[in-house]
Image (cartoon, rainbow, N blue to C red; front, side):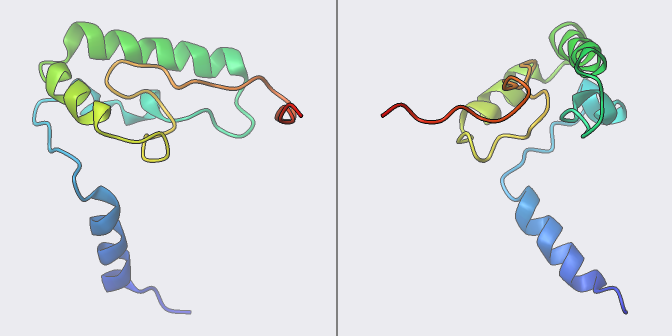
Length: 102
């Protein structure tokens, strides 16, 4: 099996289209704090990580306002699953999703 480097580059380029560069962003060297909860990660561990990410955004990021403006342009389906622009992800309750009311 061979790896399609050009295809990977095209895919990543398309996925990142419209994402601002945000030079100097505080999250650049701490991306793991901002990621969505891992599959088997305890919810308390994810909450601690996300709280650290929010603090980093709110207190140390020189481009937070620009990041917030960009995040506000995203639809719900376009938003990353983790912390973005100093906002925690809205995590659902564990277990099965609720059924729609009749």
